[in-house]
Image 1 (cartoon, rainbow, N blue to C red):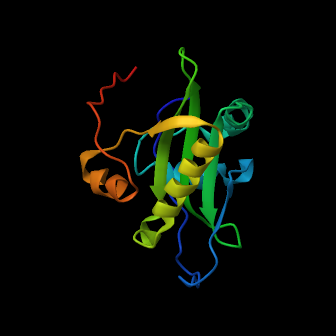
Image 2: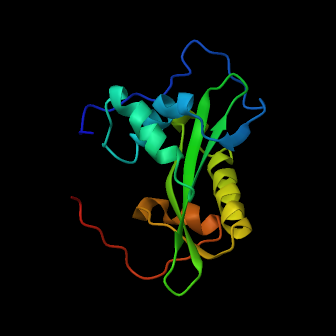
Length: 160
């Protein structure tokens, strides 16, 4: 995989989409990968080549500790995404990590992100996690606080 120019999120242009339409939340499927990667371009400029999607999906989906959730309309239009990764700790417990939460820009403020967070947290609880953690940018802190999270420590990273 290499850094390339970003995928574009799906467009609502020319579509009649009503906010009242039913929104579905399901485990992600391979066919949703281009739309999800398009959404994730808003939080990271890393963009795999479409020719690598099958290999990436095979590796990603076979992990028994990753739970990707997609919010979508009945016609398959992807509105949001989030993933939970469960880590087994050396002392015996399980810690959930929420990553890559993103909502289509035209659907923000409609409760999709909040519902994704709730579903991911529920999965962590059902799988016996003692805590769920995440890292976010400063401008997203209030959103995660509204989801019941609180600041804890300092996050650091090293880009390789």
